[in-house]
Image 1 (cartoon, rainbow, N blue to C red):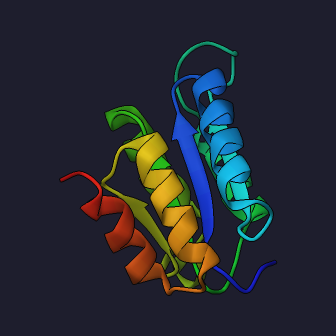
Image 2: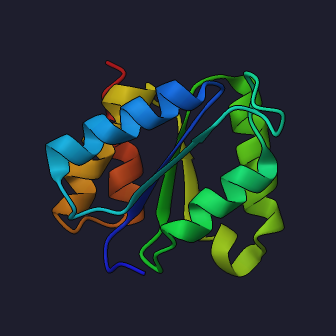
Length: 129
């Protein structure tokens, strides 16, 4: 558990998810908890609700968790995972409408400074401009 907003990266590709998370870690270090997941349960391209839930649980913070997704299916499965975690946790998780890599870097940088969940989300989403 951490005292800062955590980041979860969800991609249809395990390599993309891991690569984005590695990049964020290189840029912000260990100040922010980061998890990633990608691929479906069979190991092909896709996303898996259970894996998303595990990723969120792995970096859970009462300050919140910002989730970045690559495509529509990742967003849909992330929404289901959040719902399955129950309202107590779901109220502290947001899906950022932002590019995965750039948004994750910006979100993690903001989180490292101790910002709240809404500020982290807004910073990631503002990067779209």
